[in-house]
Amino acid sequence: MIITENIEQVRRERWADPGASWGLVPTMGALHDGHLSLVRAARAENDRVAASIYVNPTQFAPTEDLDAYPRQLARDLDLLRAEGVDLVFTPSDAVMYPSGYQTYVSVENITRVLEGASRPTHFRGVATVVAKLFNIVQPTRAYFGQKDAQQTVVIRQMVRDLNFDVDVVICPIVREPDGLAMSSRNQYLHGETRAAATVLYRALMAVQAAFARGERDANFLRALMTDTIAAEKLARPDYVSIADPLTLTELETISGTALCSLAVFFGKTRLIDNLILEESA
Image: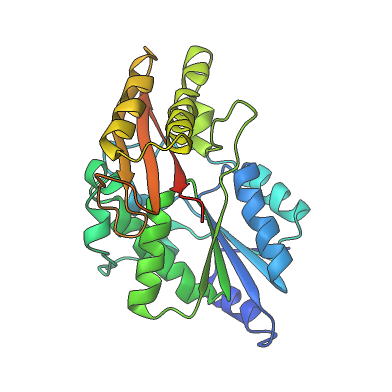
């Protein structure tokens, strides 16, 4: 496994065999089975697999957890090596944002709601770093998790709008046995807050059960999520949403498919989760 922070070395390896397909798994490290599921999907569908490990400062607001974000490079590299990853790109800030850097990618309407409303600068940073990784690695396919639902919508929009020659593959959420979606930020949870965090999954399951019974009133379903969260004393909701999965516009009535998503604070730790509601054919 080749490990490098050098862009030119990445490009040499990428194009050593121009006919080989490459899958890219962008990460911020602190890897868990959710990340590894993306690596396994990439391994199954491509000749070669690249991963990136980079805690991208431009997607963190000044009040967020950039300095505290878990960094476990040696462990992460061992996990990627065990999965048969061919190339790991581990750039520094100086490599990604050299002195004088001033170019950013902004995706417009769909970044102004949900995560974008709570974290106004977040998606500019995400779109910029992903665009840079696509340009550096030039993968055949790139793999992202459904847990970051809005991020997947934003990246697909960027790929369409900027004509990137890459197939974006979205992989299912990987969960702990109690339903909590795997996240690097779960490491911040301990004792009561870890137990309380399962309320996200309980809220989603309450909506899914109501939807299965025939409920299509989006306001009712949002209220159901809100009430479920309110019953957990350690949980503080940021938002609950029932939205169109492509435009992220809030729905009044579900007809077809909807994205059900939420963000909840447990102390200073903010977690997100979602599911897709889809009527049977």
